[in-house]
Structures are given as structure tokens and as C-alpha cells.
Length: 125
Image (tube, rainbow, N blue to C red; front, side, top):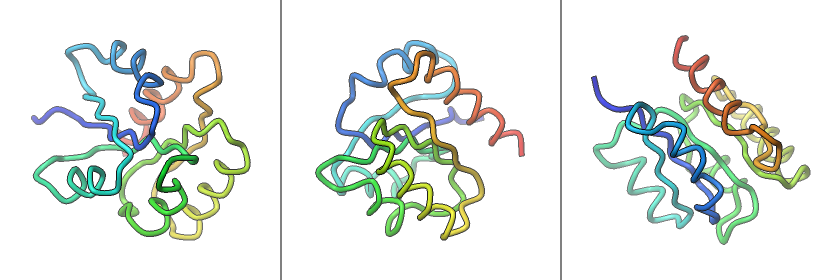
């Protein structure tokens, strides 16, 4: 079985250090990127992405990724601390009928655990 990969679309890689340490050598593998060409590379390449963490305020807005780039079958954890931006992404994901998404602000204590729990529930479906 291949290793699960969570693609974190965010311009602050340090935000995911604890999440990466929590995963350790086990699933999932955390990949952080924010440039459009990087995201496209991972989504269209031979990688089996199992979930997406999505920030809002980056050089390319999270709303663009939500509206134009992400396939609807990925579970998405909106990790933006910007409440308005996170709400806007959630509305787009809802309009596009994403199978599974949640809002978990990366500023909350213990958010990493909640993200892993969200993905584990989504993967059980």
C-alpha cells in the first residue's frame, strides 16, 4: 500500500512542522507548497494525494485553488487563520459539492491533531 500524502497548499511551511513530526515515519507524508506550478505538479503527477490542507492568503489565493484547481474528491482541511478567507473557501467548496471539507484554523492549540483526525475519518469512507 502506498504512503498517504497530504498536500498542504500554504506559503508558511513552518506551520506544518509539528504535523510532519506527528506523522513521523508513518502515514501521512506532508508536502508543503504554494506556487501554482508546484501544486499542479503534485496534483497531475504520479503522486497519490489523499488530502489537502489549504490556506487563504498566499501569492495565489486559496479561493483560486478551491474554485479552479482542486478536484472535488479530495478531503480538504481549510487551515487559514483568516476567518473571512476561510469562510470564502468553505463556500466555494460547498458550491462545488466537495465530498468532505472542514475549517480548522492553524492558530488553534492542537489543530494538528484535529487535522489528522479529520483525514482519518474521511479516509474511512
